[in-house]
Amino acid sequence: MTPDASPRTATAPEVSLELQVRLKTENGQLMLLLPPETNIGESQTAASTWTELVQQLKIRLNAGERFWQPQAEVQLMGNDRLLDIRQLQEIAEALAEAELQLKRVYTSRRQTAVAAATAGYSVEQQSSVSSLAKTSEAKPESPAEPLYLQMTVRSGTEIRHPGTVIVFGDVNPGGSVIAGGDILVWGRLRGTVHAGANGNAKSAIVALQMEPMLIRIAKYVARGPETAPAQFYPEVAYVTPQGIRIGRASDFDKSQLNS
Image 1: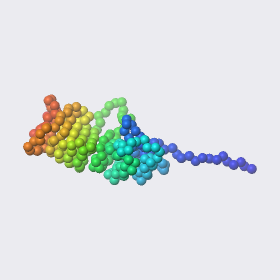
Image 2: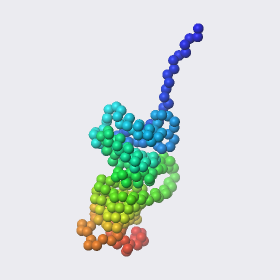
Image 3: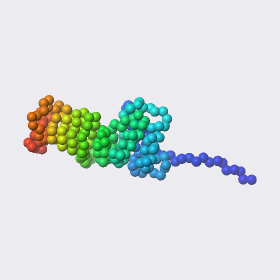
Image 4: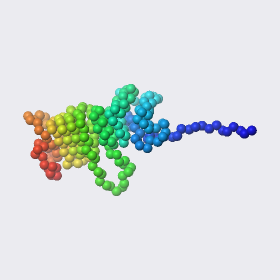
């Protein structure tokens, strides 16, 4: 009589953590990490579609002991995943059900940065090139494409972008724009702005109505004028040997940035 075959145990294929929705704390901040949009694989445990990703997020939020404080702020690490306003709202709603607040979105996709800023979240657009891909031979980086925002940057919202930022709207008090290049505000600038954040002192800040709380260009810092002008006109802030100067845009000559 042939003996019975040894029982076999089916094992699920291992899935890299990089392909799953993850929650972790780092430097006291609660971070939500989304899997990349490409090379997801066929495993059902990986978030291969948006519906599966949202379901996986809800499972992560409800599984096990919660290690966060109620109403804690969440930093969303979107990386190269393309997200629209509706998807960001779905993430925010899932977090809210777990007593969490979506505060900031990190992304390498310009469309996601625009969607997040439009939805009112703080944004930091990062380079899509991994530092691991850099060679020992330093090569000049291509300038980042300008970030165009048709919105009002409200109090509590911070926009970060490695290139030039153009806002078709106002920057309210308490709002902040930080750019590696120039900052152009086609509206009222009443918040805080930092152009040339990577150290480029030849960057400039332009606004149709210049009333900033604080302006920075590279390492230079200046407070906005204490009294509003009797008449408003487009103005530009730039660096001179004496520090930051604000003057009429119509009188500005870009060659002044080389002085």
